[in-house]
Amino acid sequence: MNLAKALEIASATHTGMVRSHNEDAIAADGGVGLAVLADGMGGYNAGEVASGIAVALITSEMRQAIPKTNLHALSQEEGDLQAVRMLKGVVTKTNTSIFESANSQPQYAGMGTTLVVALFRDNRVSVAHIGDSRLYRMRNERLDQVTRDHSLLQEQIDSGMLSKEAARRSQNKNLVTRALGIEPEVEPEIHTYDAQPGDIYLLCSDGLNDMVEDEDIELTLNAMGSNLPLAANQLVQMANDNGGRDNISVILVKIVRDFPATDTWLSRVLSWFK
Image (cartoon, rainbow, N blue to C red; front, side):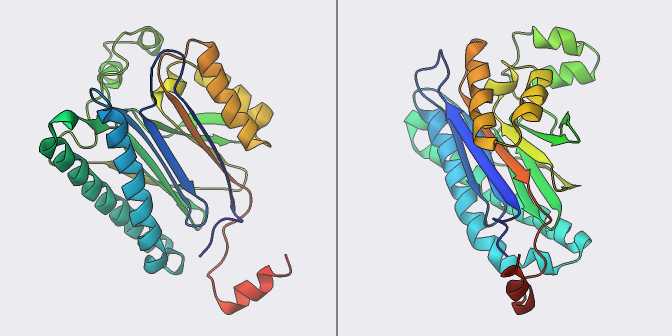
């Protein structure tokens, strides 16, 4: 089932104002309802190697798996379970690939990456994440953070050691408690949510949300949500205007209409008249 007519996607990535190279990697495929973002870490160029492996492998595997799975023909519950299984499987395979590369090539020792993946189907979105790259949802002019960071800072907030206001000034923003490729095994956090026409989903590396307050992201998406490429570039520009201390990457996915019904010959015929 091709979702391209149901989804509008725009993305942007930038090295920022301080870093010498970009260790983020992004990819999106509206045809299969997939968006992937990774923020690499490690010495030399290892970070960009890890994020590049993650995005390339996940995109390739999911492009092959999704058409075979026929998710749209399943019930909502079965579809949710199958989507979670697919995401967990591909993340496990990717973790192994990065971990083995890091351990077989000394120049890549210790490399890893954060990850956030969104899989859209049948008015649902399944989200897998590891680390502090985020997914936000804009609905009815309100922006909400959907993922919860796997970071020392988030643990300090959860335990009451830090307020959210103090966390914004913390120097520990980049200390993640979970990453892809660092250990032989990793557990992605995966949840499924309803998705509605008009929703805008934002996947971003911490180079955006560390530099731009959620309130300003919300204002920007409210003002520019009808022009996703402009909104994506504006978010990156805002991060750079505020200092651009890290690489900045964003993917915006807007649900522009209900997802297509089961791809039968009748639905294809009816689509010709829309």
